[in-house]
Image (cartoon, rainbow, N blue to C red; front, side):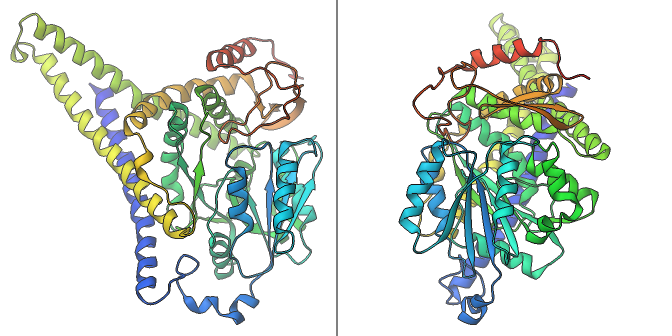
Length: 499
C-alpha cells in the first residue's frame, strides 16, 4: 500500500513541475503575441523592435560558435543550416571541429560551407585525437584556441540541435544585460521518431526539462547549448580550461561543478528550447547505449563535494525510478487478484483487502492521467513556442506523438535507469562513439580507440543515427540483447588500472 501512495505522490510531483515549466514557457508566448499585436512582426527575434535598429546592431559583441562534430546523419544538414543562417546582427563566426578528415562529417560540412562561404564566416578545424579528456571536450578546447581574438562570447552547440534564427541574439542579449552570468544554457525538445527507443529518450529528458524552464537562474546545465565569456577560457578563470582538459569526461557536468564551487551564475532564458529530431531508425539498443552514457556521467567528478552531489543524485534518481515503477507492478497484482476473486463468484464487498487495493489502483490511474496530461501540455506549449521562434521552418506538430508509447516509455526508462546506473558504477568505463574511456577518481585515465573491424565498435551515434565511419570496414550491426550481454560480460571482467 505504501508503494502505491509513493507512486501517486511521484506522479503528482512531476505533474506540478511540468505545470510550472508550462507557465514559464507560455508566458514567453504571450509576450511574443503582445509584441506582434503592437506592430512588431519580428518578435521572434526580440520583443523590442528598437533593438533591430542599425545603431544597436552595429554595436553587438562578436560571438564565436564552436561545434564539435562526430559522424554524419539524416538531420545534420538541416541542423547545421539552422545554425549558420542565424539572424544575429553582430560579428559572428562558426568553427566546426572534427577529430580528423576521415570523419564523415568533415566532407559533409565542407560541402555545406562551399554554399555559404561568401556570406558566412565559417571554418572547419581538425582537432586531432584527444589524450587527456573526452574527444568532445578536446574538440571544444581546440575550437576555443582558434576563435577570433576579439570574440567576447563563445557558444558551444551540439551538432544535432536545431536553433532558431534569434537564438544567438537572445543568449547574447542576456549576457550583455547581466555580466555576472557565467553560463547561459538551454534544453532540447525531443521529436520522437516513432520507435519505443525514441520515446524512452523523450521521457528521460522530460523530467529534466522543468529544471531549465525557470526563465532565469538554474543549477542545471546542458552541454548541447552553453554560452560563456571568451575571456574565461583565455585566462583559465576558475580553472575552466584545466578542469576540462585534465581528465574531463562530461563538459556540462564539469562546468556545472565549477560554477557551483565558485558560486557562479547559470541561467536559462525561456526562449532557449530547441527542436531535437531523433533518428528514424533509433532502435532500443541505441537507446540503451545512450542511457549508459548518461548514467556514466555521474561517475565523473572534479571535487569531493561534486562526488557527494553525484552520489546523492545517483541514490535519489534510482529510488524515484523504481519508486515510480513498483506501484504499477503492485497494481497489476491487485487487478489480477480482483479478477480471480470475481471469476470465482466472490463480490468485492466480501474481499475487503482487494477492494481497498482497487481503490488505490484507481487513484494511481487518476494520478498517472494527470501526470500524462501535464507532460502533454508542456510538450504542446514548447511545440508552439518553437514554431513561433522559427516561423520559416517546417512547423512541428503534437499529432506525431503517440501517448500510449509515452506511458510505456515511462515504465521502461524508469525500470532500466537504476540497472544502467549500477552497471556504470561498477564498470568505470564506457564506449562513446567508438572510443572507450576509463575513469579513476572521477577523471579519465585511459582512452582506447576501438578498431573499425571489431564487432563491438558502434556504426551509428545513439540519437542522431549518424554514421561514424565510411562504408569501408564498418562493423556488423548489433542488437539490444547483444549489446546488453556484452556489457554484462565486461562487467564481470577483472578490473584494470587499480594501481
